[in-house]
Image (cartoon, rainbow, N blue to C red; front, side, top):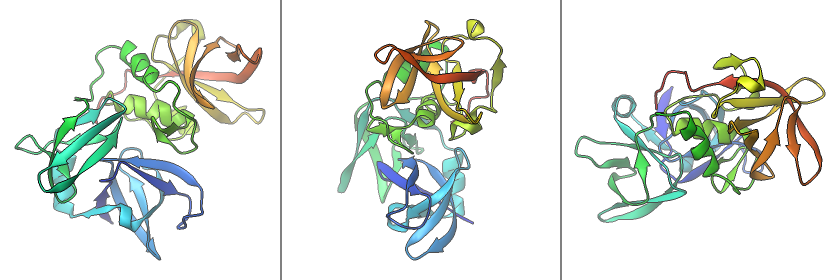
Length: 264
């Protein structure tokens, strides 16, 4: 199995090798990949961040040697914190990248990019480190009003588990892609009264399947992606949508990820 990287702003990961198949995930700039089988211009990829699999147009993935993958895997990195950032390089087209993208730092301080070395000319980036749990809530709030998009992981379209994953990614904590996978990670919080800002709540359906997730603020509210990234009231019953006057999601359990080991 060979390696690759996403050197575009956003790349759709699809359920099958076809442009008409559904998007199940998104790659962001800097996402490292393992490359699997190929089929008529499509390649099956496995994300090194969360082991999530899917199909990408091979024209949208940059293949890398094992040596380069090893170098990047041990390189220092920063994560884009604003909605977008701009990367420039003399003689090469500029690149726009989105919040949550990884920037691999080369020995001379430049950023690894397609065909050369780039520099951050607009926007902000930080070391992906969690200092205070409240930072999780602050980062989640930066996505407010982002539209819901199945498989999305960006401020321009995001789903519920994509929101939780990309927020924790910006703080150096790896969690899995789908809500039902995330619900098995971290430390179980027994009661919502024991939850602290940055804890993650999970919600099930009538078949007892985990179908939704969001980030608790510690103030009786939750930030989650439902139609858009929004703030709603939450209690031991679940999420209460004030405008609808009813509970929309039934609480199943709460997990704490802030104690997990930090690695970008």
